[in-house]
Image (cartoon, rainbow, N blue to C red; front, side, top):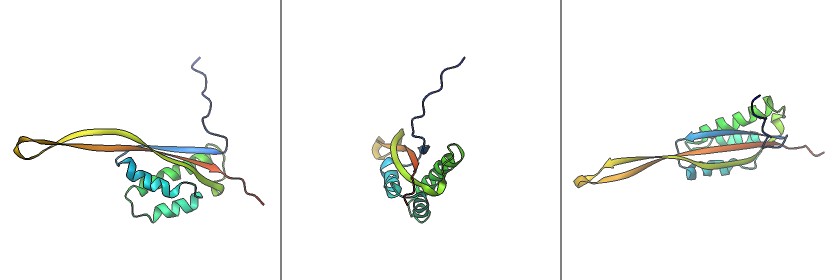
Length: 126
């Protein structure tokens, strides 16, 4: 038996990849995601390759995964893809304490973030 298959949440000309538990704040990750949002995939990959941000590497890897999902799972042309959506969500926050002077403690918060990239195939107009 099993449960019925769920409907696909994306359109037929879209594919996505999700990066979970990236050890950075969502504010820093959103700076990189905003830089590639709405651009063609080849230009976005080039921009991420030469970016000075530390999180540009994992973002590039996630974008490549979204392109591979589009090509292999949905049969889309990788040359006509654009980054339709790139959004960031909060992950978990690990709470730690660090010893301070005179018997006090300071709270440290190690934040994690989630990144979702959706690529869409555009129709070439003649």
